[in-house]
Image (tube, rainbow, N blue to C red):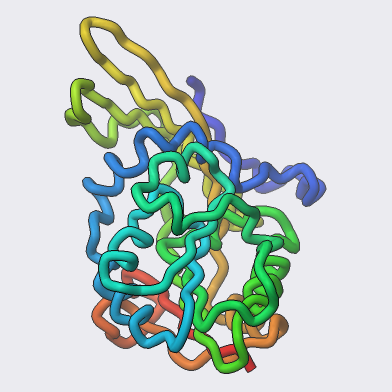
Length: 262
């Protein structure tokens, strides 16, 4: 695989040609929990549990996937519904009854159905095309009660990743299989899009299979996110820099935005 880099002199493509951010997640489903256990782990889970417990009513989780956050919320007694577009991700969720398959840009719930909406671990950064973010924020505002909280977690360092090709990132066992993650990264810095080319090499019972797919993420500044939230009817109440409630700055490990619906 030849490394591809963006050409700063090339014209900006038509926004409609930008790859949909949800593509690749079905293929990622068998490996998602394995990889995250070795990277993020569960260090954000207590934060979301503590926040969700403050809701005076039902909680909606955007991009619930395999239930990494949904399951602990259910165990903590939170009335939570998770929504995700990927059927393959949802099929791996233990609490399938608490999950709905849908597009977060057009949520299929009655107006004002929830007291809180959560968007953990950069899920909104999978909205890669122009207008996708605003559609999602407006949709979230529609299903949230007046005064309800919208909690957003952004991964700030994605656009800072250096481009590289075919780098072995992780190795280890997953059940009866041995997995090796080989990764390439390319950047579209004009539009702040980062694409990860993933190749999982699975060895099992003397046989080898390669699972290849791409994941693309978009990163926006806190200031830009705040403006988009305001246009969708939210008021930003606080911005945090870690899962312990620490102060935010541009070099913080995470960017957590807590907003209220007006």
